[in-house]
Image (cartoon, rainbow, N blue to C red; front, top):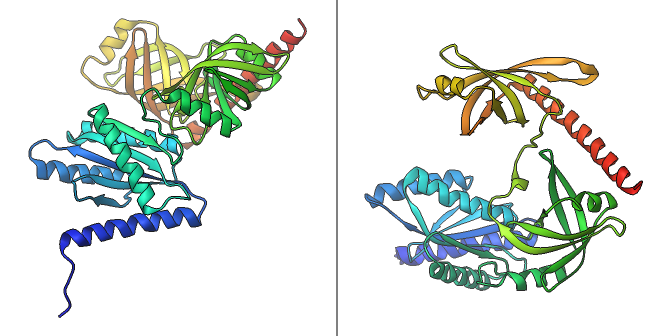
Length: 378
């Protein structure tokens, strides 16, 4: 009778085979895979907590392979994600596990598989990040690539210097009346904490009146924020300083948000029949911010803890036509005299909102073009 492998050896071989197969897949295809390794802190009862954590992890990772290592750590694969997006997913996993299951991530390591990686080089990098994260403290996620370690204390200056010497383009983001404006820029040089970029004349003219800008690149794990030292429209150049990674960035909003060019009255229809009135402050396909006319009316509307309402308002279309919109909404947040609702428009109203946003984008672009023209005309 043939001898079978013991459970521990079988588990180690199984894990190694799965990891090696993913490395080969990256080497044979133009895809991006992130490997996430983490240690968990389980509350009592441990068995139930672990089961709930596994179920949640499977949902959050689109049911990717979940490996259990000898030391009790978990290992999973995040598919088709560049580094900056993988970091966001890892942070969301950490927050969701804590909120929904009470399970905490003690420390974690994340890296992108490099085409030159072997099993040993990849695992060495993950182990190094795990040791770094453990030293930093509870909840720390250390991450990087085969070339960039973003977890080293005080290492950002070296990272930026190396990165901008190797990569000669970056995308700049700013906002005008809530509308994101993006443009690719060419790296002219980076030295002594100053980044010089070549951009368009229009972008340089716009940045002349801005205090900061955002930068993104697929190989950067998070959005960069930088202060504007000088913008030179005549040379189409901009100089940036104080580059730093930010965890939460307005650049990552899934839907464009615009501020209306004219006052739009809105009615909040409460479940008890009360009506609260205000004006739309900003609008996206999935949310609306409302400036209230009367705060006392708002208090009466939501005094019983109810958060579901109906919203009614008119949106301008082309040729000065208007469409009446009536949609279901859920209260998301309130700050002073402004409330924000998550909205659930049907297909028809969603198209109307998208059309209005497109109109506002065209209007804002026209305004910006006039600003640039006025700048050059003196």
